[in-house]
Amino acid sequence: MKKILILFLSLSLFAACSDDDSPSDNGESIVGTWVLVEANNVPGFQVDECSGQSTITFMADNTASSTFYGKNNNDECVSSTDAGAWSKTDSKYTFNVPQLGTVTGTVTFSSETRFTFRPDDLPTSSLVFEKQ
Image (cartoon, rainbow, N blue to C red; front, side, top):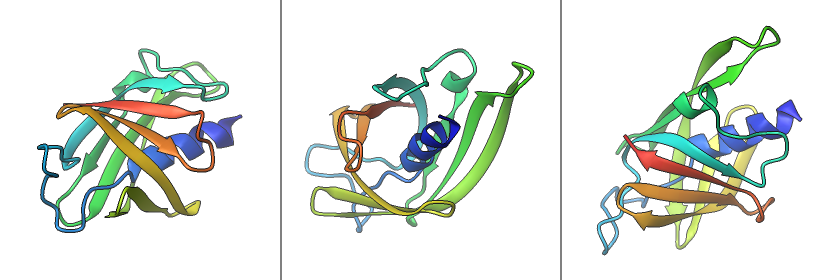
């Protein structure tokens, strides 16, 4: 169960932006810092006071960093930080996660400050982020 949670959170860390780093025609841009606000159909995981502090920062140079919060065996909220890279080709977003390799999915913006990530391998699951 922990591996699935780590997979989803790692995947979300490396969601993508366009190769030219400019916003799309409708002003959508993933560059910036985003907070995890929802996890839908993610087995054994839901956003709570601890995991809801998790952030992802996408930089214009196609790098990213994240801080993920989760509870340890003592029910204490702890964090871990990671880094990676992102890119976009057509409507597919590709990211390289050091522990998992390359993963592909889609990012759908519902506004300039909110997007949903759906991994191709688990299309019924999604993670929702809001811009900080």
